[in-house]
Image 1 (tube, protein in one colour):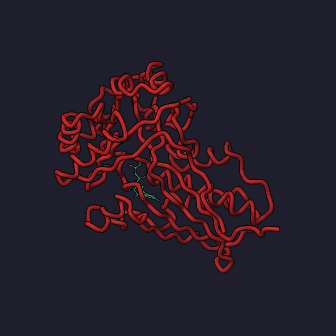
Image 2: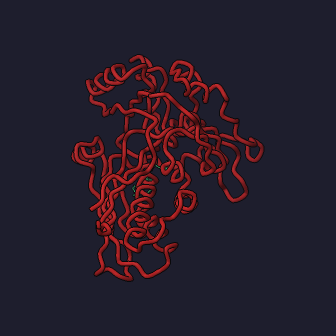
Image 3: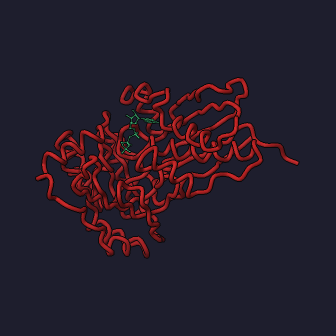
Length: 329
Ligand code: ATP
């Protein structure tokens, strides 16, 4: 008989939005979205461990850059600060762990979390949301096995995730999906595509609320109305994969406000186009810039060309699976 694990490690992907259409804010200030998400092969890893000595206390969290990741190089070179990540009850992984613990309800032993970050912080790739998704999965599995109870269902985890952040349900699901509402109403999109992407992270983050405020300033409010739907051609371009067709349809309504706040992004986008990228866009609310390449070789060529000029760039693939358990012990 195997005994219940004392720790569980789960991972969850970053994301980019191939299309991100924004509508006028509702009276409570939320912008309705129509978006096409893809999960990106850059994973955050969260280990949840039992610590009986911590009964009744909060959930201590430690964070390290994932060894060998571009984010680790950014931290080493002073281009990113680990101190930008909260280590208290604001940390999204901690909030996720507490959410699961609250639902389980019965007294449970104390928990600790360790996060290995590979996704640049405040980059528009949803790294914090990935931490939350990985923590939801890790803590759910750990507590269910410890207590000998059924784990929370994927639907329940997704609802808990939506309470933590609009991107968290997608990080749980992975693959490709249409997102509506604030991005939490998901419809999986069948895809046989393997997209070759290149991300160019920036040395400073952009605040998502600041980008939306800029979008508001540029639109006559109220009256812009509902976001444009994601066209059926964009879904068709994922199955079977047609990167050229997809490249022609890529659109991010938050790109213009992000570029206004950080004009250097326009140069990065121009440069990628000159280097032969099929398409380039600001990822989510930015400032990471994402490029679509023809092939894995073309993506590596782009990375080398950017690196020659002293810019950071990393090649990765999409779509990939959502949050999942990777190890236990
Ligand atoms: P989004 O587009 O969803 O806003 P993002 O990729 O631009 O996401 P994140 O890396 O998720 O940005 O971080 C946004 C902010 O969330 C950070 O500035 C940080 O203060 C806060 N935060 C809370 N928990 C975490 C976490 N585990 N990792 C990173 N940031 C976190």
